[in-house]
Amino acid sequence: MNTRAAPAFARRIGEIARAAGDAIMAVYRSDFEVETKADASPLTAADLAAQQVILTGLAGLDSLLPILSEEARALPWSERQHWSRYWLVDPLDGTREFVKRNGEFTVNIALIEQQQSVLGVVLAPATGELYVAERGHGAWLQAMPGGDWHRIRTRPLAQSPRVAGSRSHGGSQRALLEQLVGSDYELVPLGSSLKFCLIARGAADVYLRLGLTSEWDTAAAQCVLDEAGGAVLDLAGRPFRYNRGESLLNPEFLAVGDGAIDWAARLRSAVQR
Image 1 (cartoon, rainbow, N blue to C red):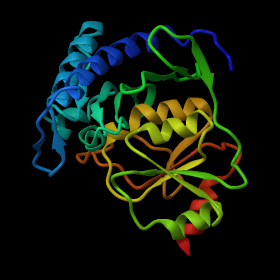
Image 2 (image 1 turned 180 degrees about the vertical axis):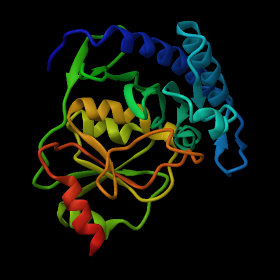
Image 3 (image 1 turned 180 degrees about the horizontal axis):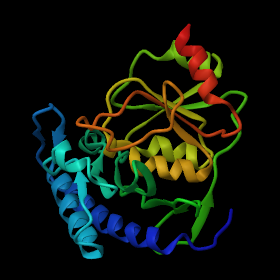
């Protein structure tokens, strides 16, 4: 793998993510309490601690650039519709996995320009793995703090594909998966945005998500996957876009690694059946 340095700006955002990860792990090692938000999703002190670290770090880079985050009050569309460039953040993606203490949670920081994710940082605090990507500069992995940077790339679709799947949000999607990749596949359950990263590093092939996700769940990891050679498509085969309207919910999607396949055509054929 290529060990040239990852892009400087992406590495700088990675340092902010690592600081947030340190705050998360301090709570992870403690006897923390779990609250329930209005949408019934869990909330811990780690979410809030990471949020503060990230907001402070990003504001220090550019205090005028808007920040949209899961743990902050969502600004109305009347204001967001004028944004051409902003940060999109999930301070702790995979809080359910955090509560289960299985290590499968991430810090997600993305820079959105003209509805597209142009910079993405995904940190797995429990393992120390840091993924960064910047449009036109590739996707990179640093396995531990201070370690070398390695360029990562997706792989051609395997004969027996590995399918990354949600550990906490499973669904009935076998029929569609079989139409897309055949019936001879291996399912790999994994939490948070790590599923995208598994594809980006060539360790899995696809991730199909039927069900609700929010824009901050996917934006950072989409940039990593895009720059590694893959893509994230809605079920009509269109690339994901952000800040599309009042709702911050994503459409259902397919994340893929093999860029040589016409996944849009496969999706159209499968969905029409």
